[in-house]
Image (cartoon, rainbow, N blue to C red; front, side, top):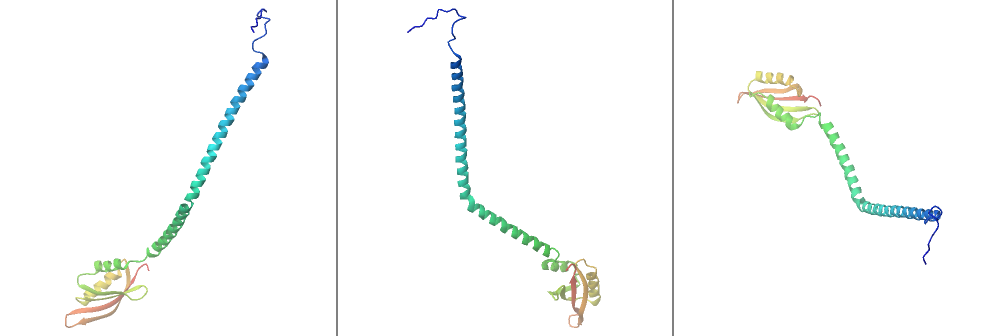
Length: 176
């Protein structure tokens, strides 16, 4: 059926009534809020799914993490022991270093035949000297040395067959 409105334009009823406009705005807002709500629900669902996957991955990596923490604690214990060892041995003189030091400070007129630890802080030195004055000069140089102190001559005897002086002495190490 065709309706014809012959009223003047000022008196005609609008095609869109106020109720229709309010209903249209309400439906539009409801659709907009519904889509925002659906998007947020989907986002929350996907994030919860990611969190669950991450928790599952962490639970699979837990033994590895425990092993790593155990290895770190063992490494810390080893490092602590190394530091203690370095602190203890830092002040001690190494045996090879002492032997090479004696090789440096010993003049050509002195031949060392034995270096041995005698007491807690001392070394027994045995050797031969060309003459007794050479031995006395060697004792003087040991008294002024930076690594040894208190050289004490225990025995010195002249060998008549080979014409040299055999000696025994003890020296103490500095810093021990």
